Length: 485
Picture: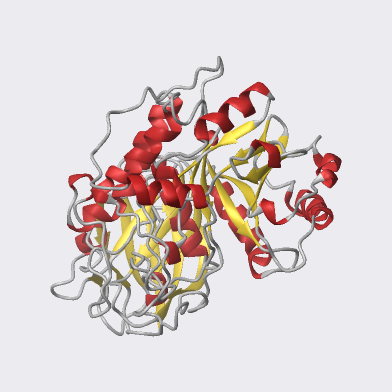
């Protein structure tokens, strides 16, 4: 949990905040000759969650009772889970943003140890990774330089390591805690280091400025001046926008104001402030607070439309006119809208589920649980094979021969944990099959929405077959949803 420090933003908001009306769209294009791209939209990303790690903030007892006012669609997840990381990167891609800025708490920290998995998942989805350098105990300007050198040396070879004009990007949270940043001169050649402030007298030796504060974004205090200064001095200006703010469950008794989402009008307001030349100036990048800082309620990550009862959770119901399950991704979709406004429509295509609507068959079915349940878009329905009769197969006809890089399998989210042993085979003609992923156990766990990712490279084949040879939870093959990407 972090604390917001923009007093100017707080005062301005308290004075000015009232009923939020949906503002007129801003022009949305930068005046510079070079058009923005998806890699100029950065989502602050938090990998600090574990098996109930962080979710218990504020004295809560996960998994159903967590320190957040919204409840994740994925439940109280583990940031180290490959399935979670894959789903997150798929959602980032759906948002249209090209970069995540991952929270990093020093060499050897929990977040540092997860960085290889984050970079690997990001690379699978064409997402880049920048770094949010947090105020760990004992941080100095010199240690920050050492950290930047370390991150270059350890992770710089990853294809997901973000660079802008050949230089990596580092956001320094609460940079004003340190007054002398002369040491940053040592890394200027290979790094763009951003200070968290709009005070232009506090950014000597930095390569730019950002705000982070999701409250101040409603009124944009000092943004135009900061933007003008950065433009005049060849620096990066990366104002931060947020859909809202609420930390009541994470920090009981906290007096920080709540910023109502107003069914999406607040997010639109902040994006308009960032892109309007009269308020946000001309942003180099736009940073989004946040993808998944659940404790502060500033997330665009999908939140469950039917959260555990009895805890007073909020939902995205009504956001941009969406209801029920459709509202869960409302802020991802709206982010994509704004990314397209900023970039002139240059966002990459969303990654479609290649299995949706395709023919699917099985070697056997339990009455009432047909193969067609496995790709009907409903995680509550499922296919189940004949019992006590392994092996069993589930075969997807893709209808053509697209490139497939992974399969995502799920069971109903309320089911207990189990491990299924699954092999993946592929065929061009539906009769002769080749193994593309050997048999291994995949653990379905309600803590990760009973969803697993199966890496499987399929090229030049129309048919994909799953072969089930074991299930620790039930003596049959079981799949609620089979997705192919």
